[in-house]
Length: 505
Ligand code: MLC
Ligand code: AMP
Image (cartoon, rainbow, N blue to C red; front, side, top):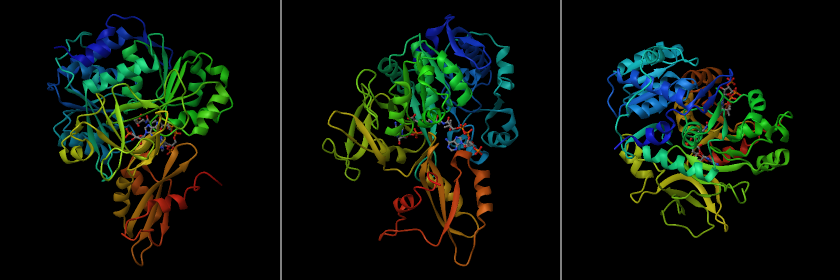
């Protein structure tokens, strides 16, 4: 028994001098350089007396070293737990405590805030900054660039990714080595990635899309990435002629189309544009084809399952659909009440099963049982249908979720903060259309009798407690919330009422 994740994604590149990362400063890191860096970090981790299966919580800016830390965790048999750089202390505290992290790695700028949180958990705290400096790399640089991978099996856990829930409490999705490897292998084949590919990588590396889809596909194919710290339109326009492919959320595509400098000429060298994490409007798909001649390939996935469906590489990439179930993925549409499979073409709950589907939520057996059936089908919370040609359409969400620029936001989490504010009787948080982010957050407040809540003060409390992308763009005071006869808040009515809030003048 070796260590399949390490052996199949990272170790295969030992001694390979071909480029892996092209960096914005003009430097290139080969696959071999990257492995050396990862091995040095693995040796440093080894010195921290961690046990295989321990969680390593990581909130750091995107950098080659941050990516090498992911490889090092695989090598050392540790569970990699990346965290959104926008999270505030209150949010981080929950993830670190809930996961029982043994090591926390953060930017030096956040060290003072995180120190008490790590200490309360008896976790070690190390720093890693955007430029690669910090205590972790200081230690790693003194280490040997070779490390014998810790033995692991495909069933061992490789990563935790936290995903919010409708109750407002985030859940740690446990992903095994097999989950990650099977998906990477499938996607390389489905999307025809080879060692000659150069992927324009502008996504964050703390979520499924940028880490397990983009990075793992490039590792598995032996290709390379133009590794950008974030999505910057000028960088993308400048570097696209050097790339063969790009993966992005729909906001990447709408921002490109909004700029006249983005021309078909810039895309001549490209072979593939992929979109996912949020719905791509059919209109964006069509405008992109008109401008460039390329048809964007849309796919559908989630934290718990990696990728489930994809439009075909060869064959029609149908706008407004997420394509076909991937090989090895069973997909069915069921009645949300009974769980019975619905006749083909009807709208219902999308359920998926396959080697990509996660193990369950960390220490939450009831939540796992509620969403992951005993026969292996995962209830996605997405509503959809399969058309007569087999294409899957996502038509809505059975879960109360907002997706803003590809980031998921669960209204409940914001409502819990709003409900707590002085003078507030209750609140409702909804997603409304937004030209840049697809959807954005709107908060509705109802005052307690004879009270007039200080909306500005409430906004600033929210800003202190929650990550920027979760902040309501606006808070609106209403006399009451619309309710149905059962007393349930009718969010659809609110969404309808405010649907043009950010899309028309
Ligand atoms: C940044 N901001 C956001 C935001 N991103 N607000 C709402 N939604 C977002 N997604 C804030 C910034 O802090 C800033 O605040 C303001 O909005 C505008 O900043 P910006 O500089 O324009 O933001 P930018 O860096 O350009 O970010 C936009 C983005 C980025 C779309 C490029 O959010 C992004 O890279 N999204 C990708 C998310 C992703 O990887 N999702 C995959 C999840 S995995 P201020 O204060 O200045 O106004 C998954 C499974 C699957 O879902 O299927 O893939
Ligand atoms: P996350 O929790 O970040 O993994 O987000 C997963 C959710 O994003 C899914 O359950 C869908 O609701 C949504 N999603 C991902 N890809 C697509 C897509 N191509 N079209 C529509 N929704 C998508």
